[in-house]
Image (cartoon, rainbow, N blue to C red; front, top):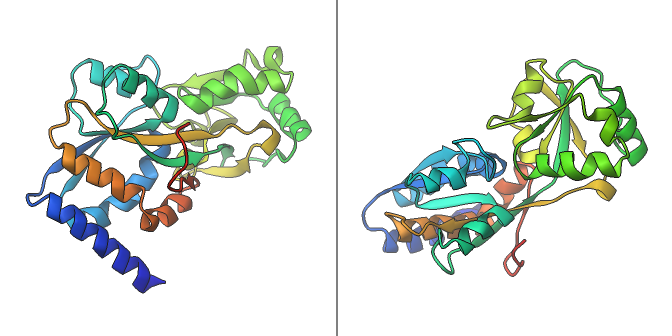
Length: 262
């Protein structure tokens, strides 16, 4: 298996190198859900191509200055954006990306964490998750797609919207789990891929399938990309079979070729 991986990676690299004779800095504005995967994949890609991946983190949506749409609106430069699929669709409709460059990458489920050392509640069913949230002293959720679902749909589905209104807080810009690790909140919700890298928390698991919300991550080359060919080559690499195993390690479900946009 290892030989197959090396051969495939080398074949891809030859394709990229033929298109990119000169190494470039490829700027990637990226939402937190896919950031861990890119950080794992970047060193091998840089080694194979000579290009350097410059990561510019930011939420896919929201009102903070760091949000990717707001960065682009201010004229900040990026070659590639990797973000929540429906947020990317808005950029496409606004002609902020290059036509035909959208690349589907991964799906990410919602999970929950508590501070390391705290009691671990049962969230394996709708009833136990409901009870855990009613018992929790405070709840945190993100300012991106998963948080929007938690605050606008999950609490309502569980019938606890009024009960948690005074103790549920949106965490902007930074990973929810980092605030739980500090003890600021008892439990935290976010996409699994954003929870797993954070130290100081215990990952309880995904929320039940009957309540689950899957977030699609996709990438595209920006309209004003300085290095569009290199950006497209990076997206091709991220969607390739060798990259899928790494993406899976970060808690996401790799998108296979032929999957439609979400």
